[in-house]
Length: 361
Image (cartoon, rainbow, N blue to C red):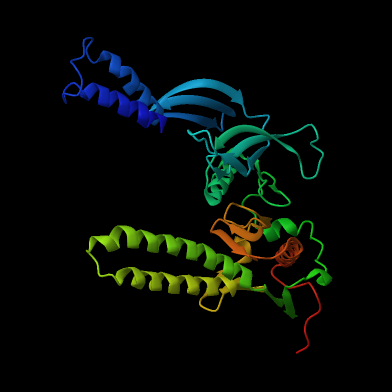
């Protein structure tokens, strides 16, 4: 933004004499080259980091359009992790008031603190490699750098944080957990989850999001629709370009869509089928059904996360090189943890259901 302002000012000032808006320039166009160069510097300038795996060095640089000017070089030997954080940044406001905020996911090289015997280890924030605002992009960048430098990866957006040692990033969740099988969850802490087991297979059904979620969706949609109707009525209806009924036709269509989305939101739930063949995730509601099948060898992590997609209370995420699947919207913390531990036990057992007694035939 600053670059566009400086560039626009310099170009306008340079062109204004030719447009008859100001007198001729007594000193020529040279003084206006300064804001133009400043603007181009802001727009085209970049600050970056170069990682040398062979020399095990990190070089910070500033440059523009292919030109890189090194600023500092340091050894990579002290870094053991590539960390992924979640941070809320407050936007600046030229008016002095609140400029709102945005969520970023910084990817940093990190070192274990002096309390390196802590489990999980405590990390210090080191060199920032990027700050994507999309979790999946940040996650992919962190894993790519960790594999390139043969370091461990730490995802601190999950609860608890997910740490993966160097050399294990290509291992599936099951391959890692078989070395130390997790404790099974207590069936007494199921909460609102529905769980049934038949031999080596099991099914978990999450509760619908419920009426409050539908009401919230309907309220937000109603406010947006009301604003759209007002704009149509004020700026389009008075022109005579459209029939007077246009506003109400549009309002009826938008209202019907809001009702449908609200119903789908209120009745949405997940059905998770666990078995040796893989994990099958069914997303269902009164209006839609989706199915996704995953092989256990393709699942690298199952954690509880708040990753900026609006799930302030957390959501269970299933990750792999193929992407991310989200399950368990609307569950409370204990239910999310129960589901996470159930999937960990199944992954460690090669997909076989081991929690609970099988239901009678």
